[in-house]
Image (cartoon, rainbow, N blue to C red; front, side):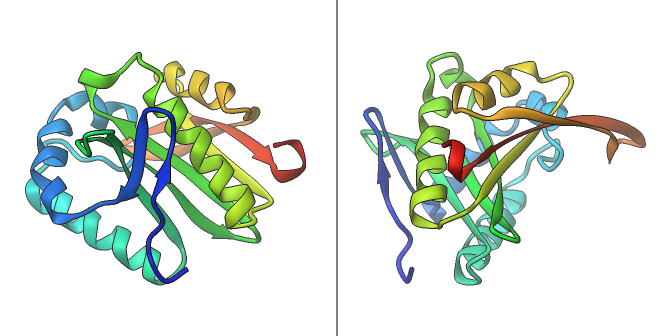
Length: 177
């Protein structure tokens, strides 16, 4: 795939991140809750963090190891992001975040469903998995809604702020999708 794909859902456009998204990403991720609920979003979140993430996302696409999509409304305004990151052996990790003003409207579920379709049908992954902290059960509900099943409790799997945290892992397989 030479050009970054654009995926469409009923209410959303999933497309490549670009420089014009950086101020919005920086503003959205200022909310400390993102750092508390994820393993890789720092707090405070700076413009340099957004630039670095954009660069990493582009490199992953160039290296065919990841697809990070901006989640946009039909007016092309960024609302969050969703991605698949190739972990080898025909499997990928699903990740996502959505800005707080857009929570509880089903947007990330809709985006993640489309990414799952893309991962299984276009990228031909056998397994797609995702994890969430125990203090973020809403993320687990999204995983269940998109057809994932709880696979494991990964005890003390992440060290964050000098504390070891458990992760719940969900997955879905191509033959069950």
